[in-house]
Every structure is written in structure tokens, then in C-alpha cells.
Image 1: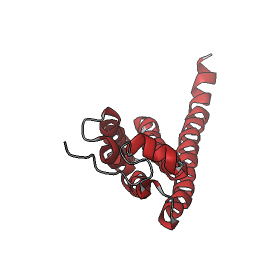
Image 2 (image 1 turned 60 degrees about the vertical axis):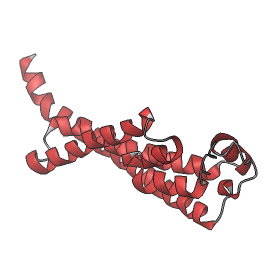
Image 3 (image 1 turned 180 degrees about the vertical axis):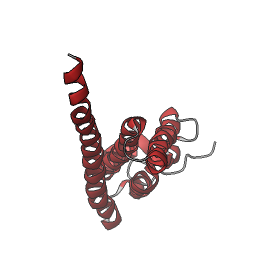
Length: 154
């Protein structure tokens, strides 16, 4: 029987950070049959559709107000996943992903792991706050524009 390949914590963290919207970190860890791995690119594509709608129809496109935050939340979630991977202890990482070798160095934390953690914190926070700010700004601008028509109809 062939031994399962070791899963490196640093590689998983960088994949989550750089290519998380494509689900590559999930495919690396769990294979191509992973349902969550396929949800990441699907939800990201819907978010990118919102970006395309803004470019095509402008910022007044209400559907894009719902779609763009999906992309931001996926980017924030994958950054959080990178942080989770990077902060996992070697024992916990190896117990989950390298069961046959509990003392594998693939679960070690090194400077590349720390770099992924720092960038994930920066990028994840930025994408989450930008998504929330975009959504609320669009919503409140819409409310201000609709208020005069509602007041006249009452």
C-alpha cells in the first residue's frame, strides 16, 4: 500500500492566501472530491460577476451590491483559513493531515509560514472591511435616493 503524501502547513497557508478563491488549498489537502473546494470558485465567480456588472452598468447596479461582497467574504474567509493553518501546532496539523508520521516536519512553522500569516491578516482584514463598507455605502445611498419618493407617496 502506498503511503499518503505529507501535507505541508506552509504550502497550505500560501495556497489559501494566494489561490483560495479557486479552492486550491482544499484540493491540496483533501483532493478534488472536496465539496468545499468546489464552492470557493463558484462563489468567487458570482462575486466577479458583480465586479463585471459594476464595470458594465456603473455603481447604480443594485444586483452588483449583493454580488461583490460575496467575493470579498470569500477572500476574507480564505485569509482566515490561511491564518488557521499557520497557527496550527505541529502536533495538531500532523494529526489531521499526516497521520502516518505524527512528527513530520511538514507540520512545522517557519518564516515562510509567518509571512503568510502576516499577509493573510492584512489582506483578509482589508477585503472584509472593503466588502462591508461597499455594501453599506450602496445600501444607504439607495435609501437616501428612495426616501423622497416614499415621502411623496404617503
